[in-house]
Amino acid sequence: MNALEIEDLVREYVVREKADGRFRRRRKVVRAVDGLSMRVAAGESVGFIGANGAGKSTTVKLLTGILVPTSGTVRTCGLDPVTRRRDLARRIGVVFGQRSQLWWDLPLRESFRLLAAIHRLPPTVWRPRLRDLDERLGLGEFLTTPVRQLSLGQRMRGEVAAALLHSPGLLLLDEPTIGLDVLSSERLRQFLRAERAERGTTLLLTTHDMGDVQRLCDRVLVVDRGRAAYDGDLPGLVRRVGARRVLVVDQREPVEPARVDDAELLAVEEGGLRLRYAFSAEETTAAAVLAQVSRRSDVSDLSVEEPDIADVLRTLYATSVGSAGRSEA
Ligand SMILES: Nc1ncnc2c1ncn2[C@@H]1O[C@H](COP(=O)(O)OP(=O)(O)OP(=O)(O)O)[C@@H](O)[C@H]1O
Image (cartoon, rainbow, N blue to C red; front, top):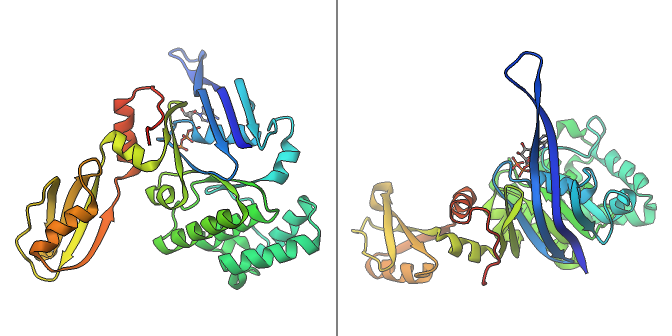
């Protein structure tokens, strides 16, 4: 079964902007979603990415029934989200990084009580579920703290628990790790991975963070000006735009950098101790670059930096103006 189905979806906004004269206002139609089609199968985890203004939030609002399509069809968990919004609320969880579904002035624990009442969950169902979420997300230390006093990382853990209290089959996440430090982001991603592995939860997340996509998604859907610009896996997207990865090598002694086949020495840093080599996944691998570097120097540490999502999108948009494509991968 498909968790999400969108067919030829169009959503327009009508805006009135000031014209030259003082009293006249021009009516302008903005097509935020412009003939978008996509499918997400139950159990999949999909990164929904695109530049600012590409139409991601509008699509998510259409998927949850907050907005009505101008034309085209939307089915979320098999339901029309506009006419079946209540039924849908029982089947989906939504986390908007910027907007809270928690009660600001109440201790976090009270939000769970209220949400349990809204979803009509009996205590025998929601209490054990909350205990489980608490154990995994580490909510215990701040369950009695008013939401307004929580740190961003704590609040996001609370938001995710709130979205999952009723154990929905589909979780929509809008920028779930925005503003979080590296450790908090990683913890949240680990939790989401485990939730999906154990319960088969479908995930759709909008993000600008490559780490989210890499760690959480097995498929990427890129939207550009309201249309699908790419549908496939992340390595396929990176290959398609020819983006380069960077191998960062720390050596014990500042040895003259090795020349490496199919990789470019980008920088020598830390007094010659750190080398940065850029390479294309089309031409070679991190292992092959490392093998050549370590022939010359004693390597103490290494990491691979992935291309920045914004750079990948810029290149994709520049090379595929408006053309939708499925990766060969
Ligand atoms: N309420 C609105 N009224 C008028 N235009 C809107 C409205 N909401 C969005 N738009 C326009 O629709 C287009 C798509 O916006 P949307 O918020 O869906 O993009 P997005 O991909 O989510 O962007 P971001 O990454 O910045 O959140 C933009 O041109 C935006 O200016």
